[in-house]
Length: 308
Image 1 (tube, helix red, strand yellow):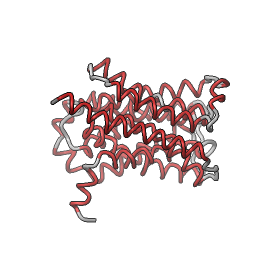
Image 2: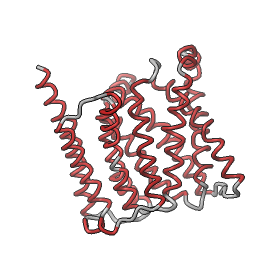
Image 3: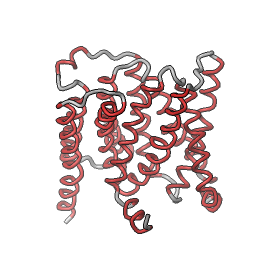
Image 4: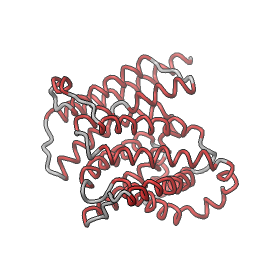
């Protein structure tokens, strides 16, 4: 592929974030497929071990080049890997064992809200009314999909352990997203390589605890396939794209795209595990895309007008 085309793609935040959220939507399906095929803590540890191997083989010369900068920021980098990658994945994969798809869909919609509020309280970043409107519309789209088009389902929602875990996972990843703005001045590939390595190190005690508690499920054939998928797509490609997307348009705006994850998860469920794609999926998708357009296009237009 022409290098100019690759550069153009890598400089397009909307395409990058679209592909990124599609990978994460696939991760939701992978989480359901992993139940009974590989235990969640082992899956998390092997996931980041695989990513570390791939990324370090590719980026080792650049990592050495920026060694001094990385060493100075080692604590930040370790915390980013442990929080954004290890802790999020552990809570996500465990929650898939004990909560429903409808709950996961709705609760994941809280992530961009956490990002916006966190950016406001921590960095005093302005939240414009048009952004709030866009976020509200995208969340409504998520709710439509999660409730299968029947809002009455909300009345019977119960928050069990899995619900609280996925909510905690969203809060953790929002924190990671917000603090990406403080990353050291190194290429995205180098940044990702170090925090992936940090995530692997942080995951080892959890996997060891799972082994000691005799709850480890070693990968079956399907478990290995799930692992291979999550290493390449939700881990390797999506994280590089998300880091770049945040760098190009900022954490609050990038966070809006996360509302697409339940939509992609529903579509992939229909394609790969035989669930039917129904009208409420289409309606929800329209709401989500409309909300993103309002928050992105209109929000930036209003900002530009106010800056004149």
